[in-house]
Image (tube, rainbow, N blue to C red; front, top):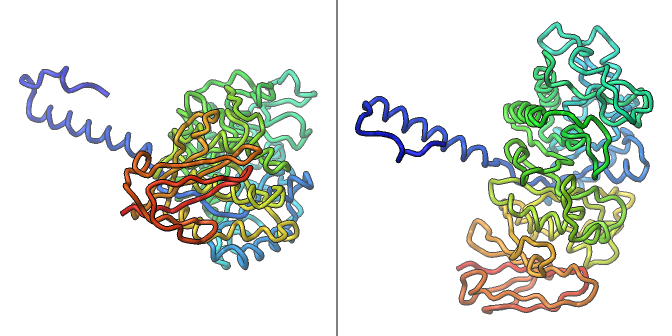
Amino acid sequence: MFCLYNLPFMSMSKNSLILICTCLVVCSTIEVLAQDNPYKAPLYWDSYEYQYTHNDYLPQDVWKEQANWVEKNFKSYGYDMIVADGWIEGSSQTNANGYVLKHHNSWIMTWKDMGEYLKAKGLKFGVYYNPMWVTPAAVADTSKTVIGTNIKICDIVDTTYHFSNARGLKGDRFGYNGGDHTLYWVDVTKPGAEEFVKGYIDYFASCGVSFLRVDFLSWYEDGIDKGTLVGRPDRPEAHYELQLKWMKEACDKHHIFLSLVMPHLKDDGRVEKKYGNMIRINEDIATEGWKRFSELYRGVKRQWWSVYANPCDGFIYWSRLSGRGKMILDGDFTRMNTFGNDEEKKSAVSWQLMAGGPVAISDLSSSIGDNARFYQNSELLELNKDGFVGKPLSGDPANPSSQIWKGQLSNGDWVVGLFNREDSLQTRNIDFMAQLGLKSATVRDMWLHVDLGRMSSISKSIPAHGCVILRIEGK
């Protein structure tokens, strides 16, 4: 951007001034649009628990069973999407353009069948897949060509690159532990690469996909996973940004929500802010409940994915990027059955909704027990419906004030979250005038579903790992 004060206006023609003003308006508009996010955080079910606990792909009958269960028990609460997660190496059957046909070769249903099945139930369809992945089956088949061209799929990947720890596996691959099924990365310098990546998203859109979860971004960016070299380390940074740009352009064309997973978020997420609708801000949730949710490497900031390991630290630190119409922070899935008590379960949902993040149920109908009720708090889910995004009083995870959150609903009401990450009873308080600009207001407890009366401040003793979420009338 240049400065008007440095331009000699008096010597300029009228047309020149008009041109300059037009350019400034256009540049300003582009800057605003680059920060605009038309989506709110999704509420959905993801198959992660089944695949993580089985370390295998998701069977078709399990997917259908869970989709029916979600429709019956959660759709009315706003959970309107089903996503099949990873373990995708077993999907090698492709169409003429090298695009995988289904979640796994054993399935009868294709991606398109899945989309139609969910559409009939009034549910959205989400897919876990990276458009930069190319199955070796398509590389080996010289009849497969990039859509709209005569370029062979084998010519858009690097099959000769040698990784030092590849165990004899050749090529620029997504990891080197999967043997012959290990996927290739698209080489963005090759003719046809852009058409392939954008065509993948066009293909998913034709199958009814409205949500694309793109994983392992750090492995592509610089080959580093938690400080360990797992892939190609010499890829130019411009290549990382270019593939995200292609994805965004194709997703925007089809109004597909683009979720970015495992990003290093270098330079305060400089690149990811331009292209994603949502970013992951913590390690996978795995099996450990509260330990993983709040305590995993608590307070430890790293220079690579993930900068903070647990969702609580991640939500606090990366709140600098969030807000209405801005980047959505993704705290990963929720396995409610892994948490130890009701206080932890309330906190697991409340942190995510207070931060404006998604709630992604990963429990199965066979494992959820009596925990569905924690996902079904209609008062709390109003935050998601409203597009609410709260902020902590401090962006430093080590500061106790980071456990106090606040934000406003679109009608002006305030919502305050008082959290306790500690292992003992703690007192949390908030002064309405100092923090909300209110002399006094009517207060409601959103978990107890009771009105607490009119007050000018509030102090609460909160059990270990618990929370209190308050709605405070804004008028």
